[in-house]
Length: 259
Image: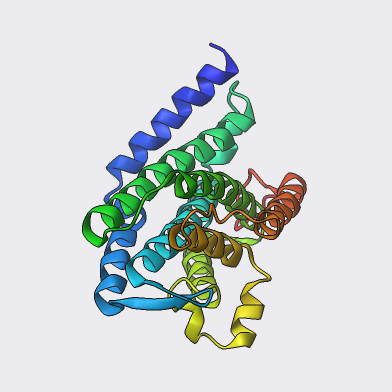
């Protein structure tokens, strides 16, 4: 069996495990839909974005899509890799004849499938229930930001796994970081009512650029939302995180003193 076939088979195995895990399925698949329904029930009518009055439903559809990308690509992957490492699964996996990279590729492949599926569901909910307008420009921006966003946050998750000594620490840090960044990045709060200092702080992190790009694509007719600045910041974060991950990623449990 070729390495590609091994990676494909391992990805299918990872996806089956995800589908059988009710808590993971609920957290990553159903929770974002609940958030979308909740925010659209609270913030009705219009909000302001880029000096324009825009539908709040479209704003929050874009926002929750960006949050879901980070939630799955960063939080879920960080928790999963750390948990498997501390249970000794990564060490045992590395001891098999299968190339080590197959495990990482399968986890990233699983992440891509889950993100693509859940983002499709979120956009469909927005279009069907909240009349979010779908266009070719929007889809082009959406695909671009999904690809760059998943790559960026997966790299960050792998880099930070080296400083997550236990599954509990990863389970606490991942969702907490995603939530804090969501508030700083105009995901949960309309950017028009956020203080300037908070917006400036959010611009340091990749979620702000992911969210702003998607919001522009969803809200500004004829725009893809793609800007050189947004892509450059996410690519820079992803490249830096990848370099850190290459140097620091560990296959042995950290809590037991492995390194």
